Each structure stands twice: as C-alpha cells, then as structure tokens.
Figure 1 (cartoon, helix red, strand yellow):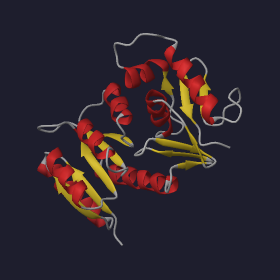
Figure 2 (spheres, one colour):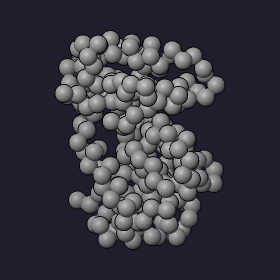
Figure 3 (cartoon, one colour):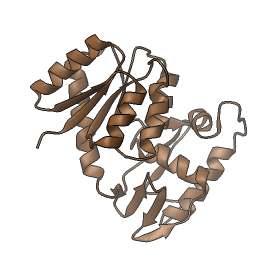
Figure 4 (cartoon, one colour):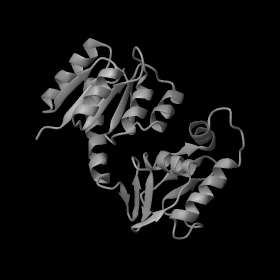
Length: 224
C-alpha cells in the first residue's frame, strides 16, 4: 500500500513540484494551502507524513504542528524560507522531526522524508528505547513496563531531547524552549536533568539515556 504524504504550503508552484517528485517515488500525495485545510485532512484520514510550510496566511506552521501533535504522532517536516537557527530549534521543540530550508532541491527533500519515515518506523510502536517507552500523545513514560511519574516540565524536557536522539541542546536552548526566553535561572536545567535521571536511569551517575556533553549541554542517547 502506498504511503500518504500531506504537503502544506500556500505556494501552488511548490505544492505541484513536490507532488510531482513524491508521486514519482510512488507516494500518494494530499495537498493543503493553509493550516485550516491541513487540520481538516488530518482529522478525517490517515497520513504517514506531513511536509509543512512555516509561514502561511493565518496560523503558522508551528501552531499547526502543535495542534496535530495533540491528536496524532505523524512525522512532520518543516519547510521554510528562513535559515534562522532559532526558527529551526523552535520547529524541533514544537514537535517537528526535521527542518528544511527551501533552497534544498526537491530530491533532497524527498530523501529527508524517507529518512524521517525510516526513523519513525523504527521507533514505533510505543516509542521504545531499550526499555524506556515514551508516549508523546498520552504524555506517559514507562521503564521496563512500570509507569514513571514525571512533572509536566520534566516530561517536556525529556520529550524535547528524546524526539531528536543524538542532537545536542545547549543550556540556553533548553531554557528558551521549555521555560521561555525571559527565564534566567542558570541552575534550572541541571536540576531538572538530575530529577529525570533519578526517575528513568538505573544508575543516575552513569546515565544511559540523557548524556552530558561537557561545556555544551545535553543529548538523548538510545540506551545501551
């Protein structure tokens, strides 16, 4: 059965170009020109992946991503004209699986869709990482089948890191994405990382999942 890709962009030329390339790769392609149309499609039928423009009339792609994440865990790739690193981090923090600048060729975009689909397939069902299971929709975490009780912010931080294994997030990026740009307590991240490790790691002083990158920040490893 063909996989279905939803392409959301207010530029008709980009939609037609991506539709052509994706259909050549044997995907079924649905299209939407704004967030409202995209949400209507997502709510009515199953899609396997969403290619989502960031800047559109009405609600932005970031807002649409958040709304999709409330009901489904479909892979989402942002497509943007902006190369601003802050936008990329924001896109990943709201639940995006990749962030592509529109200078990329259609072939590269298709390749990155395939890569995200492969990673998505590897992590499902249950988003399990060698004994640690994270359900982003129900916001529940289980370790070896037993539920782990996390606060809302603890889950947000674990979710940010685990959705992007091996990507390093700095202290400042984590503060901005989880607590907001006006929050300034430099000890907060270390405290929350320590709390999460106490709850999910077998040996918090020798973590398997949340690793420290000295002098930079933290990253999520997939366990040993």
